[in-house]
View 1 (tube, one colour):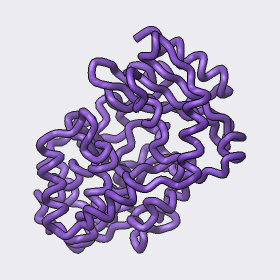
View 2: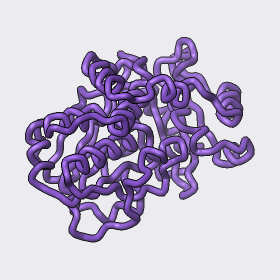
View 3: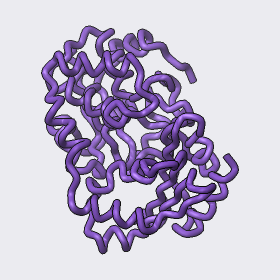
Length: 315
Protein backbone atom coordinates (compact mmCIF):
# COMPACT_ATOMS: atom_id res chain seq x y z
CA UNK A 1 0.00 0.00 0.00
CA UNK A 2 1.30 3.44 -0.95
CA UNK A 3 0.00 6.61 0.70
CA UNK A 4 0.05 9.23 -2.04
CA UNK A 5 0.57 12.95 -1.73
CA UNK A 6 -2.05 15.21 -3.25
CA UNK A 7 0.20 15.78 -6.26
CA UNK A 8 0.76 12.05 -6.73
CA UNK A 9 -2.97 11.44 -6.47
CA UNK A 10 -3.60 14.11 -9.11
CA UNK A 11 -1.02 12.44 -11.37
CA UNK A 12 -2.71 9.04 -10.86
CA UNK A 13 -6.08 10.49 -11.87
CA UNK A 14 -4.54 12.23 -14.90
CA UNK A 15 -2.94 9.00 -16.09
CA UNK A 16 -6.08 6.85 -15.89
CA UNK A 17 -9.62 7.03 -17.26
CA UNK A 18 -13.03 5.33 -17.21
CA UNK A 19 -13.69 5.94 -13.52
CA UNK A 20 -16.21 4.25 -11.25
CA UNK A 21 -16.56 6.06 -7.92
CA UNK A 22 -17.80 4.45 -4.72
CA UNK A 23 -19.49 5.97 -1.67
CA UNK A 24 -20.01 4.30 1.71
CA UNK A 25 -23.03 2.65 3.29
CA UNK A 26 -25.68 4.88 4.87
CA UNK A 27 -24.22 7.79 2.87
CA UNK A 28 -23.70 11.11 4.61
CA UNK A 29 -23.02 14.50 3.06
CA UNK A 30 -19.27 13.96 2.83
CA UNK A 31 -19.21 10.67 0.93
CA UNK A 32 -22.05 11.89 -1.33
CA UNK A 33 -20.50 15.30 -1.93
CA UNK A 34 -16.98 13.93 -2.38
CA UNK A 35 -18.03 11.36 -4.95
CA UNK A 36 -20.13 13.93 -6.84
CA UNK A 37 -17.32 16.53 -6.88
CA UNK A 38 -14.77 13.97 -8.06
CA UNK A 39 -17.05 12.73 -10.83
CA UNK A 40 -17.88 16.24 -12.01
CA UNK A 41 -14.25 17.32 -11.90
CA UNK A 42 -13.05 14.34 -13.89
CA UNK A 43 -15.76 14.91 -16.48
CA UNK A 44 -14.71 18.56 -16.77
CA UNK A 45 -11.25 17.29 -17.75
CA UNK A 46 -12.74 15.10 -20.47
CA UNK A 47 -12.53 11.85 -18.50
CA UNK A 48 -15.25 9.21 -18.46
CA UNK A 49 -16.54 9.02 -14.90
CA UNK A 50 -19.58 7.62 -13.12
CA UNK A 51 -20.66 7.04 -9.53
CA UNK A 52 -21.83 3.53 -8.79
CA UNK A 53 -25.46 3.85 -7.76
CA UNK A 54 -25.81 3.56 -3.98
CA UNK A 55 -29.39 2.62 -3.16
CA UNK A 56 -28.92 3.84 0.41
CA UNK A 57 -28.52 7.50 -0.60
CA UNK A 58 -31.39 9.42 1.01
CA UNK A 59 -33.50 12.10 -0.65
CA UNK A 60 -31.62 14.72 1.35
CA UNK A 61 -28.47 14.13 -0.72
CA UNK A 62 -29.77 12.30 -3.82
CA UNK A 63 -29.76 15.49 -5.92
CA UNK A 64 -25.96 15.53 -5.79
CA UNK A 65 -25.77 12.29 -7.78
CA UNK A 66 -28.40 13.11 -10.40
CA UNK A 67 -27.06 12.40 -13.89
CA UNK A 68 -23.80 10.96 -12.55
CA UNK A 69 -24.60 7.33 -11.70
CA UNK A 70 -24.50 3.95 -13.37
CA UNK A 71 -26.33 0.93 -11.99
CA UNK A 72 -23.58 -1.68 -12.28
CA UNK A 73 -19.84 -1.96 -12.97
CA UNK A 74 -18.69 -3.08 -16.39
CA UNK A 75 -15.50 -4.73 -15.18
CA UNK A 76 -12.97 -2.48 -16.88
CA UNK A 77 -13.25 0.71 -14.83
CA UNK A 78 -10.68 2.42 -12.63
CA UNK A 79 -12.44 2.19 -9.28
CA UNK A 80 -11.99 4.94 -6.67
CA UNK A 81 -13.60 5.03 -3.22
CA UNK A 82 -14.35 8.30 -1.43
CA UNK A 83 -14.64 8.70 2.36
CA UNK A 84 -14.58 4.91 2.90
CA UNK A 85 -12.46 4.09 5.96
CA UNK A 86 -12.67 0.30 5.83
CA UNK A 87 -14.19 -2.55 3.78
CA UNK A 88 -17.02 -2.83 6.33
CA UNK A 89 -18.17 0.67 5.33
CA UNK A 90 -18.93 -0.43 1.77
CA UNK A 91 -22.55 -1.33 0.95
CA UNK A 92 -23.05 -5.08 0.68
CA UNK A 93 -23.65 -4.72 -3.05
CA UNK A 94 -20.20 -3.14 -3.47
CA UNK A 95 -18.13 -5.64 -1.50
CA UNK A 96 -17.61 -7.85 -4.54
CA UNK A 97 -15.41 -5.04 -5.88
CA UNK A 98 -12.87 -5.42 -3.07
CA UNK A 99 -9.52 -6.30 -4.57
CA UNK A 100 -10.34 -4.25 -7.64
CA UNK A 101 -10.42 -0.79 -6.08
CA UNK A 102 -7.46 1.12 -7.48
CA UNK A 103 -7.49 4.21 -5.25
CA UNK A 104 -8.96 5.27 -1.91
CA UNK A 105 -9.37 8.95 -1.01
CA UNK A 106 -10.19 9.35 2.66
CA UNK A 107 -9.58 11.41 5.79
CA UNK A 108 -10.14 8.90 8.57
CA UNK A 109 -7.08 8.47 10.77
CA UNK A 110 -8.45 5.25 12.23
CA UNK A 111 -8.93 3.15 9.11
CA UNK A 112 -8.18 -0.15 7.39
CA UNK A 113 -6.23 0.04 4.14
CA UNK A 114 -7.76 -2.02 1.33
CA UNK A 115 -6.20 -0.56 -1.84
CA UNK A 116 -2.70 -0.51 -3.32
CA UNK A 117 -2.79 3.30 -3.53
CA UNK A 118 -4.51 5.75 -1.25
CA UNK A 119 -4.59 9.42 -0.33
CA UNK A 120 -5.42 9.59 3.37
CA UNK A 121 -5.02 12.76 5.40
CA UNK A 122 -6.47 12.53 8.93
CA UNK A 123 -5.81 16.24 9.40
CA UNK A 124 -8.37 17.10 6.73
CA UNK A 125 -11.76 17.91 8.25
CA UNK A 126 -13.58 16.27 5.35
CA UNK A 127 -12.92 14.06 2.36
CA UNK A 128 -14.48 16.77 0.19
CA UNK A 129 -11.58 19.10 1.03
CA UNK A 130 -9.09 16.47 -0.11
CA UNK A 131 -11.01 15.89 -3.33
CA UNK A 132 -11.05 19.61 -4.07
CA UNK A 133 -7.31 19.92 -3.34
CA UNK A 134 -6.60 17.20 -5.88
CA UNK A 135 -9.00 18.54 -8.50
CA UNK A 136 -7.55 22.04 -8.24
CA UNK A 137 -4.06 20.61 -8.80
CA UNK A 138 -5.43 19.01 -11.97
CA UNK A 139 -6.67 22.36 -13.24
CA UNK A 140 -10.37 21.84 -12.55
CA UNK A 141 -12.36 25.08 -12.28
CA UNK A 142 -14.98 25.24 -9.54
CA UNK A 143 -18.39 25.72 -11.17
CA UNK A 144 -21.58 25.84 -9.11
CA UNK A 145 -22.24 22.09 -9.24
CA UNK A 146 -18.75 21.17 -8.08
CA UNK A 147 -18.78 23.95 -5.47
CA UNK A 148 -22.06 22.77 -3.98
CA UNK A 149 -20.88 19.17 -3.83
CA UNK A 150 -17.68 20.22 -2.05
CA UNK A 151 -19.59 22.55 0.27
CA UNK A 152 -22.07 19.87 1.30
CA UNK A 153 -19.23 17.48 2.13
CA UNK A 154 -17.19 20.07 3.99
CA UNK A 155 -20.03 21.66 5.94
CA UNK A 156 -21.74 18.44 7.03
CA UNK A 157 -18.55 16.81 8.31
CA UNK A 158 -17.75 19.92 10.37
CA UNK A 159 -21.26 20.51 11.70
CA UNK A 160 -21.48 23.74 9.71
CA UNK A 161 -17.94 24.64 10.85
CA UNK A 162 -18.71 24.15 14.56
CA UNK A 163 -16.74 20.95 15.25
CA UNK A 164 -13.18 20.79 16.55
CA UNK A 165 -11.95 19.32 13.26
CA UNK A 166 -12.58 22.64 11.46
CA UNK A 167 -9.35 24.25 10.23
CA UNK A 168 -8.25 27.33 8.35
CA UNK A 169 -8.10 25.15 5.25
CA UNK A 170 -11.75 24.23 5.80
CA UNK A 171 -12.75 27.90 5.64
CA UNK A 172 -10.52 28.44 2.60
CA UNK A 173 -12.30 25.59 0.82
CA UNK A 174 -15.70 26.99 1.79
CA UNK A 175 -14.62 30.40 0.44
CA UNK A 176 -13.80 28.81 -2.92
CA UNK A 177 -17.29 27.28 -2.94
CA UNK A 178 -18.94 30.60 -2.14
CA UNK A 179 -16.94 32.41 -4.82
CA UNK A 180 -17.98 29.79 -7.39
CA UNK A 181 -21.67 30.42 -6.74
CA UNK A 182 -22.65 27.69 -4.27
CA UNK A 183 -26.03 28.46 -2.67
CA UNK A 184 -24.55 28.83 0.81
CA UNK A 185 -27.62 30.25 2.55
CA UNK A 186 -30.05 27.77 1.00
CA UNK A 187 -27.82 24.78 1.70
CA UNK A 188 -27.25 25.84 5.31
CA UNK A 189 -30.99 26.27 5.82
CA UNK A 190 -31.73 22.86 4.36
CA UNK A 191 -28.92 20.98 6.07
CA UNK A 192 -28.74 22.65 9.49
CA UNK A 193 -31.73 24.89 10.19
CA UNK A 194 -34.73 22.84 9.10
CA UNK A 195 -36.22 20.05 11.24
CA UNK A 196 -39.03 17.70 10.28
CA UNK A 197 -41.66 16.74 12.85
CA UNK A 198 -40.30 13.19 12.66
CA UNK A 199 -36.83 14.35 13.64
CA UNK A 200 -38.18 16.41 16.53
CA UNK A 201 -40.20 13.44 17.76
CA UNK A 202 -37.07 11.27 17.66
CA UNK A 203 -35.09 13.87 19.59
CA UNK A 204 -37.81 13.89 22.23
CA UNK A 205 -37.66 10.09 22.47
CA UNK A 206 -33.89 10.21 22.86
CA UNK A 207 -34.16 12.71 25.72
CA UNK A 208 -36.54 10.36 27.55
CA UNK A 209 -34.56 7.17 26.96
CA UNK A 210 -30.82 7.88 26.92
CA UNK A 211 -28.74 6.50 29.78
CA UNK A 212 -26.30 8.79 31.53
CA UNK A 213 -22.94 7.50 32.79
CA UNK A 214 -20.04 8.92 34.77
CA UNK A 215 -22.12 11.59 36.44
CA UNK A 216 -23.52 12.88 33.17
CA UNK A 217 -20.24 13.02 31.22
CA UNK A 218 -21.30 10.13 28.99
CA UNK A 219 -24.60 9.28 27.31
CA UNK A 220 -25.79 6.13 25.56
CA UNK A 221 -28.99 5.84 23.57
CA UNK A 222 -30.14 2.57 21.96
CA UNK A 223 -32.92 3.10 19.42
CA UNK A 224 -34.99 0.01 18.50
CA UNK A 225 -36.12 -0.23 14.91
CA UNK A 226 -39.71 -0.53 16.13
CA UNK A 227 -39.46 2.95 17.65
CA UNK A 228 -38.33 4.43 14.35
CA UNK A 229 -41.31 2.73 12.68
CA UNK A 230 -43.78 3.90 15.34
CA UNK A 231 -42.58 7.49 15.10
CA UNK A 232 -42.66 7.31 11.31
CA UNK A 233 -39.15 8.72 10.88
CA UNK A 234 -37.34 8.52 7.56
CA UNK A 235 -33.66 8.04 6.86
CA UNK A 236 -33.43 11.79 6.26
CA UNK A 237 -34.96 12.40 9.71
CA UNK A 238 -32.27 10.19 11.24
CA UNK A 239 -29.36 11.77 9.39
CA UNK A 240 -26.75 12.89 11.94
CA UNK A 241 -29.14 12.11 14.83
CA UNK A 242 -26.10 10.66 16.62
CA UNK A 243 -24.83 14.17 17.27
CA UNK A 244 -27.91 15.10 19.29
CA UNK A 245 -27.09 13.37 22.63
CA UNK A 246 -23.69 15.08 22.63
CA UNK A 247 -25.42 18.47 22.71
CA UNK A 248 -26.70 17.85 26.25
CA UNK A 249 -24.84 20.11 28.70
CA UNK A 250 -22.01 18.26 30.41
CA UNK A 251 -21.90 15.30 28.00
CA UNK A 252 -18.38 14.72 26.67
CA UNK A 253 -18.91 11.37 24.93
CA UNK A 254 -22.18 10.11 23.48
CA UNK A 255 -22.99 6.84 21.74
CA UNK A 256 -26.09 6.25 19.63
CA UNK A 257 -27.03 2.73 18.57
CA UNK A 258 -29.63 1.83 15.95
CA UNK A 259 -31.02 -1.51 14.83
CA UNK A 260 -30.63 -2.06 11.11
CA UNK A 261 -32.99 -3.91 8.82
CA UNK A 262 -30.32 -6.61 8.48
CA UNK A 263 -30.38 -7.29 12.22
CA UNK A 264 -27.03 -5.82 13.21
CA UNK A 265 -26.50 -2.67 15.25
CA UNK A 266 -25.08 0.58 13.90
CA UNK A 267 -22.96 2.48 16.41
CA UNK A 268 -22.09 6.18 16.18
CA UNK A 269 -19.94 7.90 18.80
CA UNK A 270 -19.38 11.63 19.21
CA UNK A 271 -16.85 13.22 21.57
CA UNK A 272 -15.48 16.61 22.60
CA UNK A 273 -11.73 17.41 22.49
CA UNK A 274 -9.91 15.46 25.17
CA UNK A 275 -11.87 12.27 24.46
CA UNK A 276 -11.42 9.83 21.58
CA UNK A 277 -14.55 8.44 19.92
CA UNK A 278 -12.47 6.12 17.72
CA UNK A 279 -11.11 4.29 20.77
CA UNK A 280 -14.65 3.10 21.43
CA UNK A 281 -15.49 2.04 17.89
CA UNK A 282 -12.13 0.33 17.27
CA UNK A 283 -13.10 -2.28 19.86
CA UNK A 284 -15.86 -3.35 17.48
CA UNK A 285 -13.93 -3.24 14.21
CA UNK A 286 -14.93 0.31 13.35
CA UNK A 287 -13.00 3.54 13.10
CA UNK A 288 -13.17 7.24 12.45
CA UNK A 289 -11.87 10.34 14.15
CA UNK A 290 -11.40 11.43 17.74
CA UNK A 291 -14.52 13.56 17.49
CA UNK A 292 -16.72 11.20 15.47
CA UNK A 293 -16.50 7.49 14.77
CA UNK A 294 -18.69 4.54 13.91
CA UNK A 295 -18.95 0.76 13.72
CA UNK A 296 -21.36 -2.05 12.95
CA UNK A 297 -21.88 -4.65 15.66
CA UNK A 298 -23.09 -8.16 14.88
CA UNK A 299 -25.15 -8.44 18.06
CA UNK A 300 -28.64 -7.54 19.29
CA UNK A 301 -29.31 -3.94 20.30
CA UNK A 302 -29.36 -4.30 24.09
CA UNK A 303 -26.31 -6.56 24.12
CA UNK A 304 -24.52 -4.08 21.91
CA UNK A 305 -25.51 -1.18 24.19
CA UNK A 306 -24.03 -2.92 27.23
CA UNK A 307 -20.81 -3.69 25.34
CA UNK A 308 -20.53 -0.07 24.23
CA UNK A 309 -21.12 1.22 27.76
CA UNK A 310 -18.28 -0.98 28.98
CA UNK A 311 -15.98 0.35 26.23
CA UNK A 312 -16.88 3.95 27.03
CA UNK A 313 -16.25 3.51 30.74
CA UNK A 314 -12.77 2.17 29.88
CA UNK A 315 -11.77 5.46 28.22
